[in-house]
Length: 218
Image (cartoon, rainbow, N blue to C red; front, top):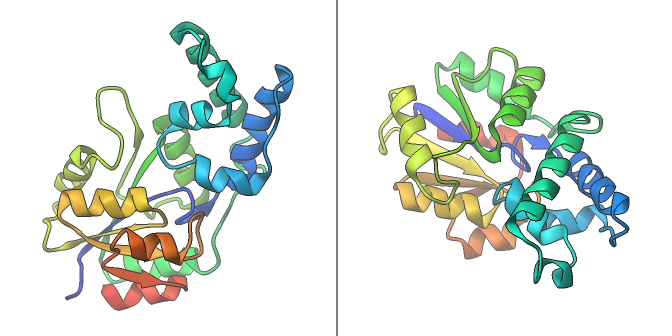
């Protein structure tokens, strides 16, 4: 059936943010004399919020004895570095601006729901997709991160959408689990950070390999 509302993940779904995320985290690691990671390694590090990202990039031996306050300082340091270079190398995936414009032309309600911190999520969406999305949410205090469905329900209510009229679009198993937990039709995109195999294993309702393929669900 045609869906009247789409909720999109951000990183790896509509924006390729990998290089800027990797650069910020590697700069933090370099400052402290810790090993850095190749950009491609960050494909597996991202997806569960910035705090988890920081834990994943730190040396495991360090984490064993790291106090909460010290860990929070590293998380904040990484966030500040990332915020300072949000769109140095970030860009929309091929065909995404055109597909979003066509969805909007068809009167589909559009939202972004990300585990990326809320200020950075809003700034990136405003910068790259002005006037496209009606609702934009990132990770916020007091709201569980995906795959918990709480933020999905909130976003659907703001869109005036129901489970029957809303589709969820993402690139990872976190996204497919989020959609399943919320009872939504899930569309996995293969151009992002994780790929088709992970999406299939996560029971995506549909999988697309080109942005224009999203239009068949609207």
